[in-house]
Image (cartoon, rainbow over all chains, first blue to last red; front, side, top):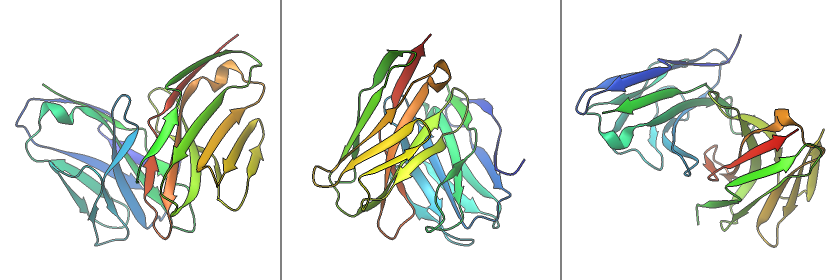
Length: 113
Length: 112
C-alpha cells in the first residue's frame, strides 16, 4: 500500500550510542518531516525538508541531524543518544503546501537507557 | 504565539454522547486548522480540516466549529461510538508554510 514507511518500529539504545531512523514515502511527495511525540506534549517538529536537497530546523532540532537522501527518503540521525531522546518518532510527508494534509508513518518507538 | 492550546486532556463519554474538544491559538497568521485522529501504535491520520473563512464544517459525524474573533476552534463528534476511542490532536498551519503546530492531544474513551 502507498504511504510512509518507517524503520525500525522499535529500538533500544544505550546512552552515547548512535542510530539512524529511516523514512521512505512512495507518494511522490515533495516535503518530508520528522516529529517526536511525548506524553502530554503533542507532536513537535524536529526537522523538515521542503524539497530534495534542502533541510531546515524545526522546534526541537538539538541532538539530531537529518539527510534528504533523495525525493523518497528522509533519515534522522542521533549521533550520541541521550535518555531525553526517548520518544516515539514520526515521519510525515506532503505533496505541497496547497495539497495538505500531512501523511504520517506508524512511528519508531525509541528507548534510550 | 506559536502555541495551540488544547483541552481537555482526557474525555470519557458513553456511546451516543457528543464529546467536544477545544483548541485556542494566538497567532493570526494561522490559515489552516486540521484535526488528526490517532489510534494506539499508529501514526496520526487527518480527520477533518477547516480554513478561517468558514465557521463550520461537517464530515459525517465529525464537525469543526471555528470562531475567528475568539481565535478558537472545536471538534464535535456526533453519536459517538466505541470505535471513536482514540487520541485527537488539533493543529494549525502558518500562512505560506506547510509546517504544523500541534496541540497536546485529547484522549477520548467512548464506553458502550
